[in-house]
Structure formats: C-alpha cells, structure tokens
Image 1: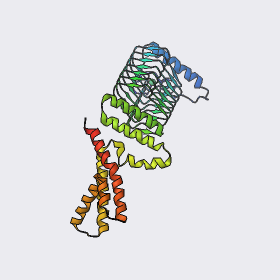
Image 2 (image 1 turned 60 degrees about the vertical axis):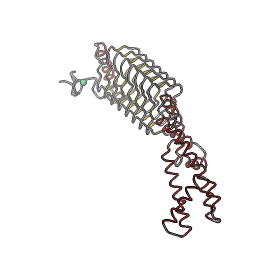
Image 3 (image 1 turned 180 degrees about the vertical axis):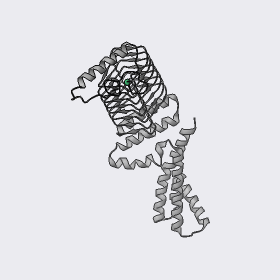
Image 4 (image 1 turned 90 degrees about the horizontal axis):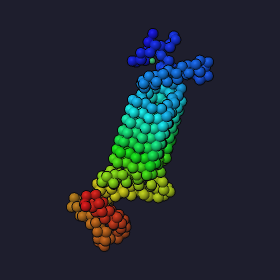
Length: 359
Ligand SMILES: [Zn+2]
C-alpha cells in the first residue's frame, strides 16, 4: 500500500496509512519510539544520499544537517519537527523552505550559506530562530511566522529583502551589525521583547508600519533606526512618521506628570510633523474662544459673532493685541489664556509648514 500523504510514492509503514517519514511520531515514553525514530533517521539520510531533498510534511523528532551540503532546494514545507532543526554551517545551493512547518524547538542556521531564499512563511517555531553570521543570497521570508524565543540575525547578510510582516516574536529581535541589500518589513508584527538594530545596514527602507511593540523602549529604538534609514534615503514623510512614533514612545517612558502634560505636544502639535493637525488645532482654539466671548457679551447677533471671531483671530496671531484691547475681569483672564496659546501655536504652525513644504 502507498503512503496516503499527498504525492508521496513510498510504501506505507507496516499496517499504517503512512510511510515511515510521514508517520506520526509516537510518544517519547512509548516502547516503539526508539525504533521508529531510528527508522525515520535512516530514511532521512537515505533520501539525502540519493539527492532527494524534498521532505514536505515529514514528521521527525529533530533534524541535524549541520555542516552538510545540498545541491538543490531543501524543502520542509508543512513538516512537523518535535525538537530542533540544526542547519549550522550548512551550504544550500537552492532555497530553504519551511513554510507552514511546525518546529517545537529551535531553528539554528548559524554560519550557513543559502544561495537562494529562506522561506518560513506562516511557520510556527517554539524556540529561537538563530541566523547569526548566515548568508542568504536572496529573500528571507518570515511573514505570519510565530517565533516563541528570540529572532537573532546578528552579522547576517541578506542579498535581497526581509519580511516579518504580521509575524509574532516572543523574545528579543536582534539585527546587530547585519547587512540587508533590500527592504526590511515588520509591518503589523507583534514584537514582544527588546530590539537591537545597532550598526545594521539597510539599503532599502526599514518599515515598522503598525508594528505592535510590547515595550516603549523597543518602539523608541526601532523607530529611531527607521527614521535614520528613511532620512538617508531622503523620504521625509516616512522619516517624520517614525520621528513621531519615536517621540510618542519617549513620552510614554517619562514620569506620570510629564507623560500627560506632553500629550498636548503629541496630539494638537503632532510633534511638529503634521501641519494639518496643527492648523486644525488653531481653528478649534480660535472658534472656541470666539464662541465664549460671544456668549459672555450676550448680544446674540451674527455681527457680534463676526466681531468676536476677528478679536479671537488677532489675539491668536498677535498675542499682545488681545491683552491690550481686552476687557477686565473674567474675559480679560480668558484673553491672556488665549494669547498664551496663540504665542505657541502660531509660530509653531509657521515653522512646521516651512519645514514640511519649503526648501
Ligand atoms: Zn509518505
């Protein structure tokens, strides 16, 4: 009888539906575990010796192909590996595929040389993913992957782009001294640990659009690095976006009083990178004060309102005006408050516009 796994032409093992490689691994404590695991490893080596590196959907205890050489693609798509995957100092002349694979332990590829892509799309890795000093000639793809431990890419060289879009990383994310010839995407990823992007070289863009950082320190470090990368490329809109997020995370790390006082700088002022937001704040203050003056005066005519609007506008842009021409009492105090707000908002508005649109 043939193995029931899709496109597998091997004979099924004893009375089971699957061949030895696709057979579910028995419990480690059971009597036949040793025997089956041994047979699985023998079959794995036999297949490798025959130059067949297609291990789609295999179920193994662990994989150790360290210091080996593969002349073609190494495929473990949909495989279930109970323990670790060891591919240290391995040479792979094609791609490495672990899409939808489930690895209970670590995936260690330190010092390996991959001539094609490294694809771990939607893979689930219970332990660490270590790619330190690995050379990937093309893409490194970890979109929608789950990493239970650290994602370490220290001194890694990637010949094209890297993606961790919508991935989840439970441990630290480290790209210390790594080199990326393309872009790096962490969009919508869930980064739970600390991040290290020191000395990383990214030729393309570094993206953290809607990335969820568990700690503010990680958001600050990642967004600062992304800001520098985009400034270097000359994309000011993106650099501003990361500057805003860097400032936001810095604010959240301050003591409780500062944290809330600075909310004013973040939202209405937009850290000086969103002129439209600032313009909106300007008009809201202008209208609110004009409305209060109008109510206080008690003459509810459109003309009276226009007059208050004019007064409020002049107070905003020439703070001294309102204070000089104001009435005494409560309205006088309000004038001073508006003049103070105007003294900050109007110049900031001009500077922000100039910075954003003028050269
Ligand atoms: Zn099979």
